[in-house]
Amino acid sequence: MKKPALLAGILLLSSLAIVNAQGEEKKEPASTNPTVTAITSKYHLNEMPETLSVDKVFPVIGTFESTSGEQLLLTVSLDPVNKAFVWISGLPQGKVKAILYKSPATYKIMKQKTEEGNDVPEGTLIYDKEQNILNICIGKKFDGNNPASAFVQEENNEKVISTEKIKISKTAPAKETSEKPWLYTGTKQAVTTAKNNPM
Image 1 (tube, helix red, strand yellow):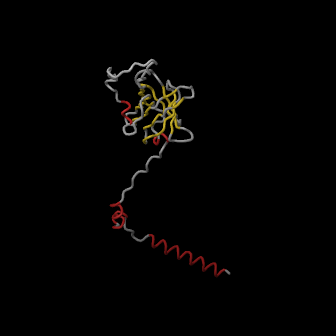
Image 2 (spheres, rainbow, N blue to C red):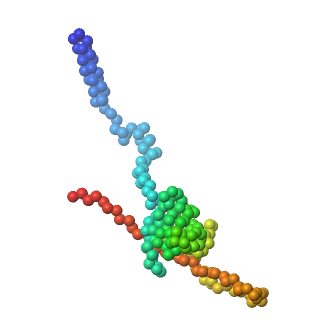
Image 3 (cartoon, one colour):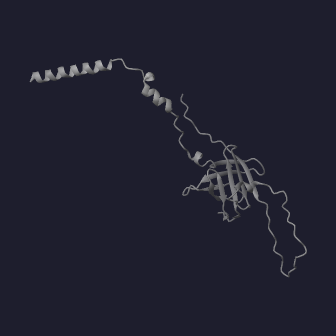
């Protein structure tokens, strides 16, 4: 019974000695190995991309402070059910809903009635990530081909009416309502986060 255990021990020690001797053989450094050189010349390691946050996917989300006109603090938040919709709070018209038209930050404000009972005409919301500016126009029809056209000021808003073909009726004439669109421009406020401060 002692002989098989002794034989197993001797075989184990000899196999360890052989493996150790093979590991001590002179190895070629990886930098001079032609296979490694061929691979590293073609391929380079890139840094891992940052994780996508909600702010990166939907840059319009946040709080905005007006830069001109009346001082308004607007908050744009995602709809909890459908991420294609955003809610704009803080407008004089009330809380308004807008739908994503072109990613990442062009939204169409649909004609709607707010919770406060105010009628809100169609409009446009565009957020410029590079300049950190939010532009909102309410009261001008949304142009799908060129949404930024809502923010172009028309130089001559007066309409010329020919007096030759005006018929006078007994009923009161319908008044044309050409209200000026409501415009808002604001900058996004920086979000400060609390960090752990090791002491």
